[in-house]
Length: 347
Image (cartoon, rainbow, N blue to C red; front, side):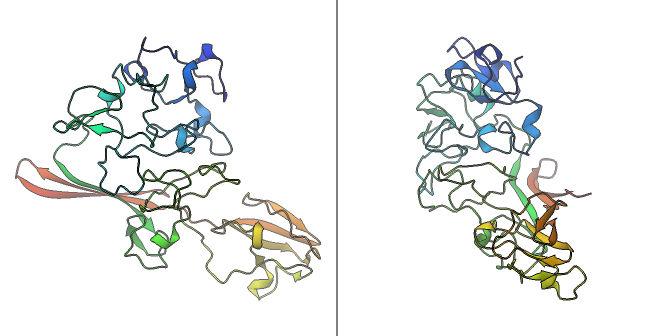
C-alpha cells in the first residue's frame, strides 16, 4: 500500500516521517510529495491524469523541486534561486538540489522537514552558498561537497537552449522574448499569468519577468484568490479574430454563408481568456431570449440553446515541436561545436 494514490493516505501507507532515522532520496528514486510529519506520499498512476486528479504532476506542487501546497506563501513555485526576494535580479541560480544535497541527513525531505525545520523547496527560504565551492550551506547544511560536476549528464557544455515552435511567428522562439512581434504566440504580451514563476512571492507585483511554459492543470489556484489560475504561457487560439459573440434571441443556421451565423464564442464572464473553444451551429434555430447557455468545455459535445444546438470545437493551438540547441567543447579538436535537435510533438 505504499503507493496508495488517495489524497490523504494513512500513515502506514506513507514513507516514515521520523527524523533523522532515514533519508528518502538515499533509498528511493520515485516521485513523492511532502505530507507533513506523517511522511511522504508516493505518486501513483493517476499522477498522469490531468482530468481533475489532484495527484497529477500537472499541478506544480507535485513536482520535484517545487514548494508543496502546505506552503501558504508560495505554493507550487520552484526554488531555483538563492534569494527569496522577487526583485533580486542578481540572485544566484541553483536550479534543483543535487543528489548529494538531497541525500544529506540534514535534508530529510520530502518525508519530513530539514534538520532546522524548513521546507527546502519553499521559495521564501533564503539560501546561502559556500563562497568557494558554491554548495548550499544555509539555512541548512546539505553537505560539504562542490556542486560542480554533481549530477552531470553532459560534459564540456557551454550553452543549452530549449525553444518551442511558435505558430504565430512561424519559427522556434524563447518563451517571453521581448523582441518577438505582437502576433507571436509566446511574445511577452501574451503572458496569461503575471504572478507565477520562481522569482515571485504570493500577492506581489511581478518585477522579474518569468518566462515559464507550463502544461498546467484545470484546478490550479496559486494566488489564493477565488477562481482557478491561468498558466503563465500557452498558445492562445487557433481561430483568429474577428470573434463572433453569442447573441440572445437570434437565429443561427449551419447552412448560412455568413460565418457569424454559423459559429459563436462565449461572452462576458462566460468567456475564458484565450478562447479555448468556439461553438458551431449544427441545428438551425433561435437562441434563448435572455440566458446564455452553460457552455461545455469538452470537444465534440453538444449544447442546447433555445431551439439551436451548438457543438463545442477545440480552439487551442497544440505545441507542435521543440528545438534543443547544445553548444559544447569538442575535446578532440578543442573547438566549440553546436548540436541542434528538433523533436516533433505531433508525429
